Image (cartoon, rainbow, N blue to C red; front, side, top):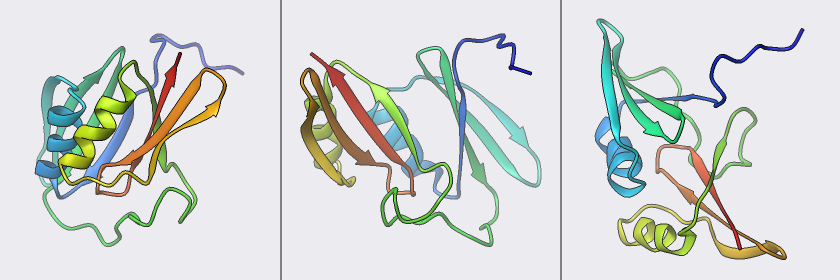
Length: 134
């Protein structure tokens, strides 16, 4: 049975106790506009950020979780480890992320003719692959 999508995009959720770092990276650096908040008393608050037709949900936890995601790069453990954004200003984003002190594990490089890629990291364990088509 295939999923019958009611929305043609994939939303993602990120959990952290460092909401300020997450908002600085996703809202301030990447420019994802805020799309409301949903409180979950005793758990935390979900800050919704719009990314095109998708929503990035950042759950800012009230308490430290028993385990934290690895920040050793996206191949350091299995599971959902990276998101991909297809952009028109890859170099500009990479420069801004580096200047803001966030990691740039893979600087821009040509993946194949007409496709440039780079990887940036949010400092919380999530890698963002940037892809630009020329």
